[in-house]
Length: 125
Ligand SMILES: [Zn+2]
Ligand SMILES: [Zn+2]
Image (cartoon, rainbow, N blue to C red; front, side, top):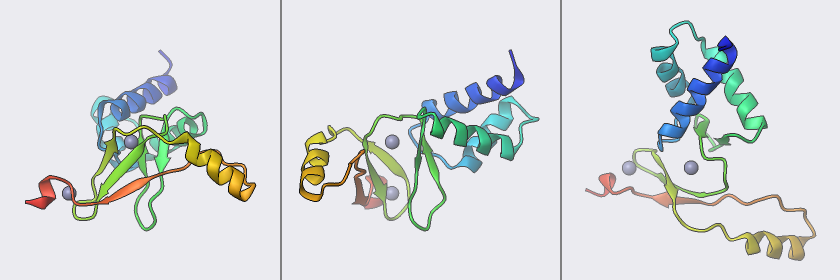
């Protein structure tokens, strides 16, 4: 198999096997265990390409490192204010909200992002 696609496959598999919404640095450490010659730049480039292709999501949080999500379907997140971990929330996405906002503003709405904040179960103890 071609080297480039092997790296891309490893990145995608690692992302899909975790629910931790990791940073590029974390992904790089994991890929390096399988492909010791891989560079951080290659990992960044592959992540960028996959993001542009809609295969993965990049989650932008203000003041934080970008985190990546192997699940590219629109879904909601919970971020813990104490440990910073990000969890997927299994609630349906309300597409009617997009329509309501589009109707009331005249804007062309592509999607909305919802992030819940608070304390995860571990941090409540
Ligand atoms: Zn927590
Ligand atoms: Zn997610």
